[in-house]
Length: 108
Image (tube, rainbow, N blue to C red):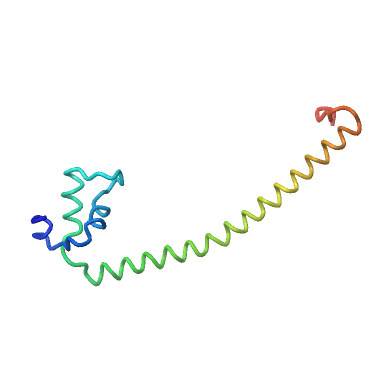
């Protein structure tokens, strides 16, 4: 705790602090992660840092906003193709039952 206080880090956010220094996300912090993480987050955030992050978040939001409608449209196209394929499969199955033998695709 003294080390964290000496670096000027608010101890109140211990959970957030742990998450920030757990670089590999495995739920444990080894010595290297701890030292590198503490060095990376020590001190106050500079206005330029906050502004840069704000710009990055805006960029990510724009990308997601452009990708999401395309994904929804692609999902609708996929569902349409799946319904068409299912209907075709049922029709071929019904036709082959009427004829009494399976359709030989090799002779077509």
